[in-house]
Image (tube, rainbow, N blue to C red; front, side, top):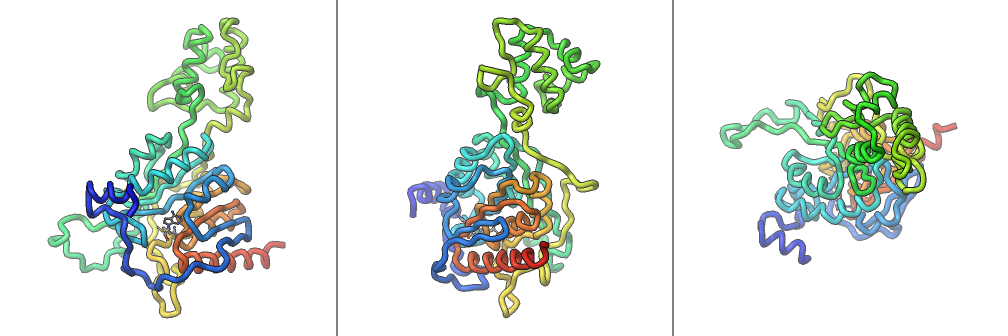
Length: 363
Ligand SMILES: C[S@@+](CC[C@H](N)C(=O)[O-])C[C@H]1O[C@@H](n2cnc3c(N)ncnc32)[C@H](O)[C@@H]1O
């Protein structure tokens, strides 16, 4: 037991990391694979601990985290949400070190698992955007749940929480820095409207300090920066500069924000039944290989919303590598890791089959 685990265990014995001892496993554990890495179709995955891979992977545009839930879901998962902050802490710290303000994090978990992990994510610089609810519908409950015994509403949901890395310049959050630069130039706030050629939107949106703040689009940032450098106090120039030598370029400003686009009609509630039939990878005897396999279409949705072809996707807790598979199909580059030899083997078989299919169908 590591020192971290034993501290957790002292606080809450039920939270100690422990083996599932086969609970829910369809396959017996197997020895480590001879080949510990596989690549194909723009995807690279390894058998091993993602903590040892982060420094080797290229800068992520998107991180898809589907790790511990505090339900003994896999060997190494904790047995209660109380152990999740310690479980995630080293990963979150590494993600923050490698992420840029253009990185999106999708954090899958149960509602209480997310609540437990949220404070460490926020402290590490991840800015909460919103919580998306995967609603599996009534079909997910067997129909014979005795609510008098469980004494709660039956749960049919999981969360996929959207975070972005908080951009900071001069160690200030972006919105604070923007207003600070404008003030530093000695300009009255209302002249930001003149700079942007709008009636009052610039002050209300781009220099606002509340939750109503908007990130200035590149063209508007350019107008603010050019105006401040032309009309601001000469002794403080350059204004809106990251390096103190020249104002930020359009490309530098664009990189202070993560990508996002929402397909028409999609909201933060995703009605989608749990995996059924052929969607699930099963043994020859028809048993689910991995209890936590995620729907490919939902992984596709989150990756597509936050990246472009060629962008880098990380899947640190691979399982059957559903995010890597979605990334492959979308033409992104993906990097994944999995600690369990039998999940790794099946995940690689799945990726290999998909990349062969792609090679055959791509002219
Ligand atoms: C919730 S499952 C992921 C399921 C996956 N999203 C899918 O669709 O198949 C989490 C997986 O992460 C693996 N895991 C846990 N800690 C890990 C680590 N430090 N490095 C690599 N894999 C890890 C577990 O063995 C488990 O298979």
